[in-house]
Length: 136
Image (cartoon, rainbow, N blue to C red; front, side):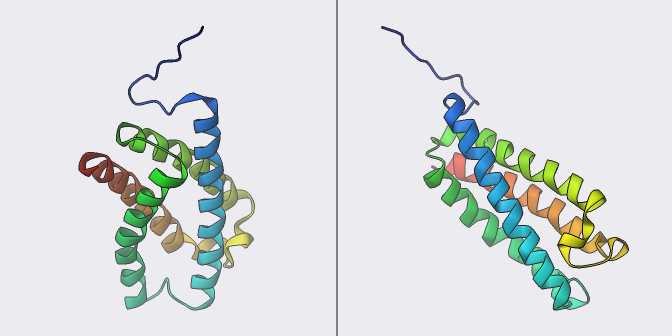
């Protein structure tokens, strides 16, 4: 009989990693759709831009709680799990922002606020995972 142990800070098994990557890719696709909408509605300009940044906090907190449920992660796996999903999303963003920026619904030179918002969102998602892990 083989006993499988779990290392601290590492999602359980390959299926956990695959789940986190899939969740990260889905999150990236949703962010692309939102950025297309927000660019078209002019939300990355003026006071609305600050609202988008502020909304990152409750969205990230909800996502951390949802990730814990959908990813079936124990508290000590929240930050590594979130990081795995965000790695997938960041790879896709890095490629898309440079190679196919049209998918974001704006010319490349107009994507700076959206790119900054994406990076800010990554930080808030990691922070929310950390807080969720500490408070669970």
